[in-house]
Amino acid sequence: MSQERFMDNKVRQFSVRDDIYKTDVLFIVGCNVEEFVRRMEKLGVESKRIDEYVIGTVIPAGKNLFRAVWVERFREGNIEDYANLIHELFHLVTIICYDKQIPIKAYFDKECGDEAAAYLLEFYTKRCLDKLFNVPKKKSKKTA
Image (cartoon, rainbow, N blue to C red; front, side, top):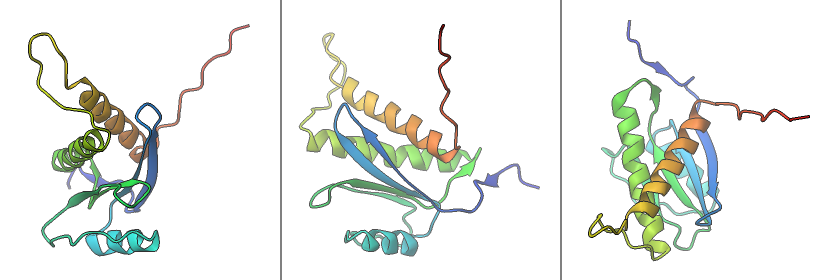
């Protein structure tokens, strides 16, 4: 029996907002491409043509008020699924940086021109995994 398990076979649809760069992203995880397209059309977003072999995509904001990330599946403990999610998050980060006119450049001569992109990748990875695993927020203890 495989150690992998599906997250519960439910499609996960959630949004994440980053207040620093003022970005809103809709995530749709765990459905086939036809269901993704149907959900986007229901929101009034024409999604680009997606080839049948694709297992994830990012739709830039453009005329839309938000960006969207889709991955076909996400199984707990499945390295391929984690890698695919991070692959799509990287595309998201480059699109956000382009839209916000944030250059991404390698670390040269003590300049850290990739810190904004690194922050965004970390932020969206944490928030997305938090939503996928339904990790409740820790409540802070009030001091007397």
